[in-house]
Amino acid sequence: MSNIMKKYCSIIIIFFFLTVSASACAALSGGQQRDYGLLKTAVTFSADKIMGEFGDRIPDNLDEEMFLRIVHGKIPDEFYKALTDHSLVVVPKGSYYLLKVYDKSTHALILFDYSCTPEADGRVLEEPGKFDVNHLELYDPCK
Image (cartoon, rainbow, N blue to C red; front, side, top):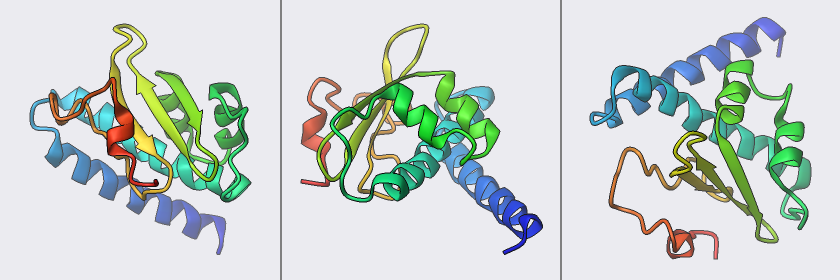
């Protein structure tokens, strides 16, 4: 596939995810919806790159630094920036990982994702009160 086609496909995918995310974020302001949609898509694209790197053998030492190093240059720059604008905690779980995304200023959990699913699992900002953020294992679809 040519670079132009790859870029075109990426733009279509980004537009799709942003459109879906924006419609689901009624409680968030316009800017927050856009940023959150970008973050959710970044998490999804990153999972694909991490799983492509390690397959079903996630190393026990996978942390934020290694995670960002692996996805850097493999996902669009705006996705990478969305990730680096937040605090990340990566919890390796053998054949998959849990990614927790925190707001840097409030230190509140705003999103979590188990890498075995195609989309971000815990959209905490979109669904306030739905998740027990102290017991994310309750939402692990990979067990």
